[in-house]
Image (tube, rainbow, N blue to C red; front, side, top):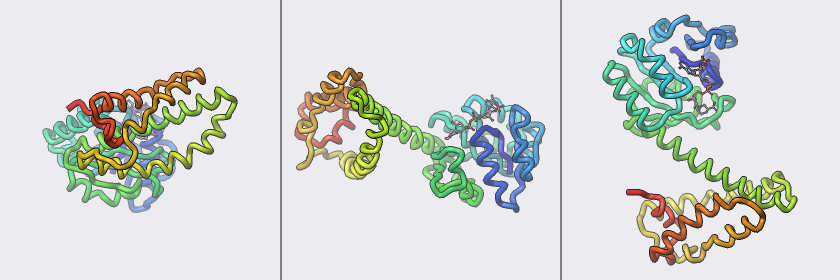
Length: 282
Ligand code: FVH
């Protein structure tokens, strides 16, 4: 097997493969010298992309972005015919689909992967990688994929893994912004961010248990509730207190705006999850 791209993540992936003595691992990187520790551990260095991809039937790609994947693979497309490319470079769903189409045109089996981990987590049970695209490629190389992380096959649509990845990142960054907004509110009164984190961490972790109930409401399309309604969840006081603390209320004002849109449309008696309807464009 071959690993193209020896950045922080590519090195972790190749290193994990080298832990299995039966594996023959060929490595390549645009800038020479980044393979030294891997070569010391038994990896075979390739001096060209062509030599790298022709070393075996499985080519693992972990580069900076979509453009760098094309810059690296386009010149060797003919040599990839009949091989499998597992692309773990972060990209958008449409970029993954474009690569799947490109691969099909060149007779390449294409599997797109989305890594839900940082390099130090690779090879541990905490790491997860989502895959979409060629299911035969996923099944055939499952043993290799499982060495890195918990692997799940999501869909034949090559864009699905990326979509799930980016949707989770969107949720994560919104949550981080919410935490930092709360931290700004309390630090304005001299409470340290660390003290705030000690309280917010267990609270927010417990609150994630509401995801499933919200998901059920969204999937059912019925927002009727005998629990917390949109009217009840008026967040304007949170916006006001944020202003009083001298803190930009942007994160909570955004949520209040989504809520208000549904209330103004006459849905104040519905469940809070109805703000999902404020977000949908179609
Ligand atoms: N590191 C992480 O925590 C995240 C976790 C989630 C998934 N990401 C994605 O993984 C891809 C690689 O990330 P990385 O951390 O290895 O990134 P870098 O350390 O910056 O290494 C980038 C490699 O890409 C090579 N490269 C860049 N441009 C080109 C190009 N035009 N042609 C060929 N190779 C290129 C670069 O080579 P060099 O600069 O050493 O010559 C590195 O090997 C990425 O999509 C993350 O979003 C990681």
